[in-house]
Length: 112
Image (cartoon, rainbow, N blue to C red; front, top):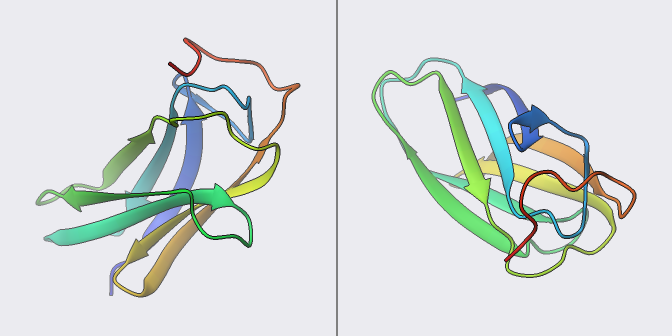
């Protein structure tokens, strides 16, 4: 079975647990148990306990142990508790919890 060893959220290259509502890009970095080939890994971003506002897919290449997926929000994020959920098919492989907080620093260029 495929497993995510660990995942984290990064903004501007730095690990973050708090994100500004106007942040221009959010990146989830994951380490997997080495697997020969994985397709259709899905990343869902959204407020905790709610339907995701964004879903994106990533295909891992042969032999990768580290992957990252970057989402560029199209609108300001609603303050509160958020999650990035990593799935393969119907199986949840990992969850990254973070908080959208207007008091958090805005890292790098803001949302377009």
